[in-house]
Length: 457
Image (cartoon, rainbow, N blue to C red):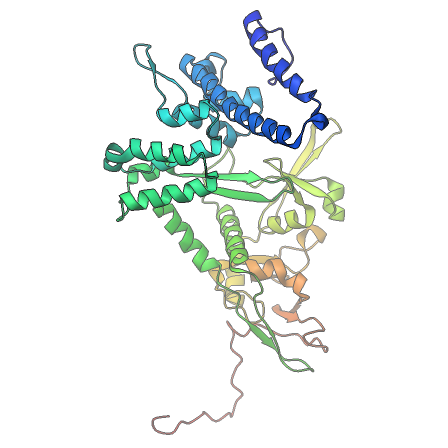
């Protein structure tokens, strides 16, 4: 059984599954090398038909599960939760399966009568194996997007046309055809519908095997506008900086792509929201980014830490993310029990932040114009290497330069309590410290005559 330990199936279920198993076993043992090319192609096409029909069987099963309220009977909150718990499928896939069954599976009326599927013609074509699940998704999505008037007047004809064309087109090409059909029937487009937008809203974070997180979903116009406003103010290119050296001036420009800048802006805004403490409590404590690592990993900065969602993140990246956070140390015994725990201050206090705001007045990296409100506190000596949380050893940096100054080869040095930056040798072989003059223009030497312009100049 897929859901857990094997149990004896009832005679009825056993007979049904044995028939399917026998058919699959016959194909697995088939002498494929003895088939001609035409026969092999015919078998491939026939197997595709059966694969498509398998989805129709799933719709029947899920419709029966939902009609009987099986999820509640076995203690699950929803049919999707039952699929996740019993079949071990991802929540997103479980949701898609349930939605497809609701659209293409049989229904039961209030008095128990059997009703046709919502999209009957599409379901019938899928049941015969003529169209795939991808084709069916294109058709149901297209029909769901029609306005009420357009659906009433042309919905049945659109469905019939798309089912017929699905015999010749791939799902991707069918989607293009569907767009053309709808545009022809409704050239002015469908007016925005708040109700439909609220129903279709959603956001999901899917994780790849390499640890990268892929966002998918559909945002309402209001949510999209708010997100765009945040990204616009935080994803502007870092200002180009010209550094004078022995070999002449060198101009550094932001090499990030627009997509990379938007990614960094999303990270900056999320970390700022966590640091500001404006989020509601979660689990009885302030909302927290929980990252777990061993003491040896902390000291050696090697290996991977674990997030509260079970994702792996490199130790250096984890420590960089935690730059603006307090650290709670928890010592566990070999069996996972807590031996001791404590809290060590890593964050600058509000009074320290105000002092840094007054001194740096913005990102202190040379040439950067990011204002003070968008900066983070950086320790000259990293906190995990013994650096102190002191205004004499901290400086303000924007998120971009906080992440990249080491990669760019720059080093922070403090002179008389003021942050100065030592450029890499390839910019200035003499490595003379420089200071950001964007927030602190250099004073005009005493005795310098003002520049006078001719009339009209």
